[in-house]
Image 1 (cartoon, rainbow, N blue to C red):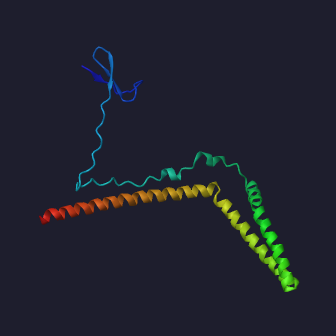
Image 2 (cartoon, rainbow, N blue to C red; image 1 turned 90 degrees about the horizontal axis):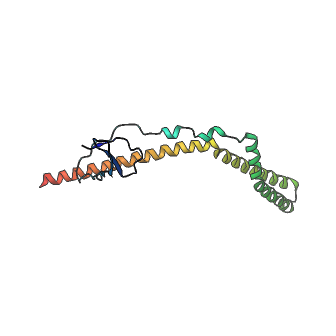
Image 3 (cartoon, one colour; image 1 turned 45 degrees about the vertical axis):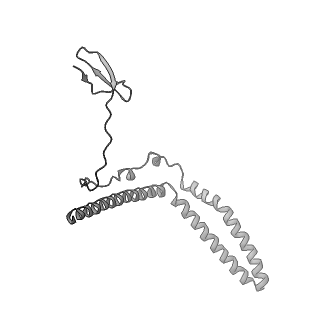
Length: 181
């Protein structure tokens, strides 16, 4: 009588090794599993297992997180280098605006006030760019990954709840039709 072996050593996918009582091996096509049937309309589905959402992958630190090679000094130099074109444009506009303010106002305080205003705008832009840089650092990206993973899990749970509610509504409507007949 043929016996099925439980191991799949050196057997191609879709094939199964059969060994008879004499120890001879035969290779036969593996039986295919029938496709899963969809539930019939109105069939009550079993409740979903009550288990917490799996967020473990969101809290695990990636391997490359431990290999941060960028120092704070290098990061600050990068922010300054990326800010140079913007700060140059602000300085050019400040000088041009100060000249116009001096010509129109005719006094030095109006030109100095405009220069101070443009310096304040330039400093604000530099602070905004610096915060943007640190928001996209390794720590900021990790936080974003955790938040987005939690949002995806919540959307999945909300979708499952909505599907179950719709199935229950359809079942109730079908039962109402059966009782009205």
